[in-house]
Image 1 (tube, rainbow, N blue to C red):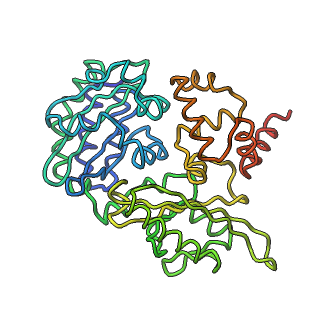
Image 2: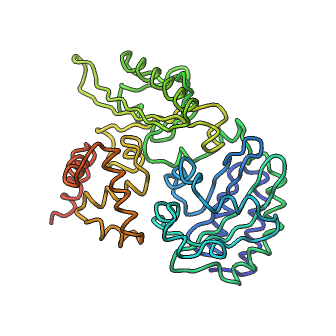
Image 3: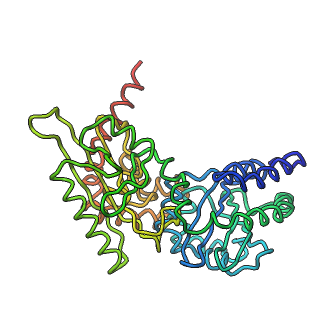
Length: 390
């Protein structure tokens, strides 16, 4: 930790710098994280007009973790209700409300928070009005315990500055087109990802997606629209329409897949596309108010290793389930996986049953065979073998 006066003054300067810089909160959170330590610092906001999570930024929070919380785990997070009802100037400490017995049986802690190395939360409400509620959350690891008094005192000194800056820049924490363009979550993902309207207009493409355009002719962008080979374009647009209907009628979240290949008389090429709908009432406000399609790609010729985004898109696995599947593929038994991840064995067993269901497999050998025959798995094995050679 660094709770010096010099650190305090640096953070204060960064806080007021957010009023001029659209992405200014990330440096604030990173500097604050360096000061108080712990697992991560999270700044989140709930849009009052829509009653939904509208902003999410943090220090030491991987984008896949952020996205998974937004898409699934915020809805079973027992802390959210307490955070939204607490007094604006008070600090909330989760261990005072949720003891170890609760944590041991709660799916949010067992499936999401603890596997990502967090257990304790200290949080303060920075703003609350008719537009939004903004909360600062400090996460600490299971072995670290709750926030120590000196670090909490440091945060309390900073609180008036944080509150003032948040209130002056509150427009950044509510649904807006500006937030849609400015948010960097998709840009951080290593997997090629595009956000599109359900009719195929490209709203945002990350750096990996732009690189993919130069590696294959199976996907292109022209006049702001996604262009796929004719046979696949219709399938994609029909799938988008079906996804929107499913979300609006039942609220369910589905994934669709495209396996595209080049024409027989063209150079051999293969591209996999996986897409789902981001409905504004259920997902991050920075993705915009209208329904958007999140389309991720896997190109065997350019990807070096399969990642959690692809597994999640292909089979609907959560990040925690992807971790379990990966350890199984490496030959680790379920009890050892539970010990490694620091969760209950019963949690891993339930996750394994869910993985079987989502991948249409019935036994561990069958699941491992499926995982090891994914194209990127072969690449990953080859890279490992080469690295092991003398």
